[in-house]
Length: 67
Image 1 (tube, rainbow, N blue to C red):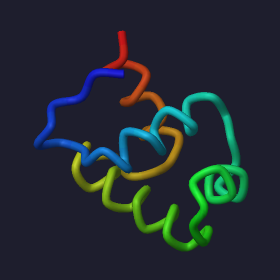
Image 2 (cartoon, rainbow, N blue to C red):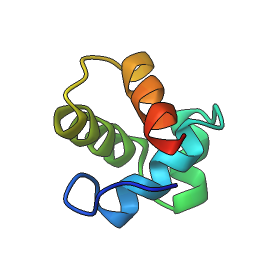
Image 3 (tube, one colour):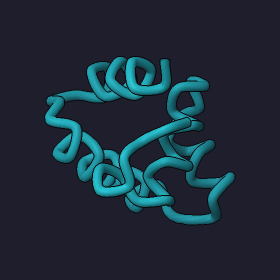
C-alpha cells in the first residue's frame, strides 16, 4: 500500500490494510493488540487527514490511493 508519509503514520497504514480487507474494528484491534477505542481514534485521525467524513468514504479513499 502506498501513501505519502506525511499523510498517514505507519500504524494507520497497517490499519488501512486491514480495513480494506473488511476486518471489523474488533478484529483489527485483536490483530494489532490494542483496544478497539484506539483503532477508532486512528480511524478518526485517518478520516481527518484524508478529508473524508465516514468509514465508507475512508475505505474508498484508501482503495483509490492503493490503485
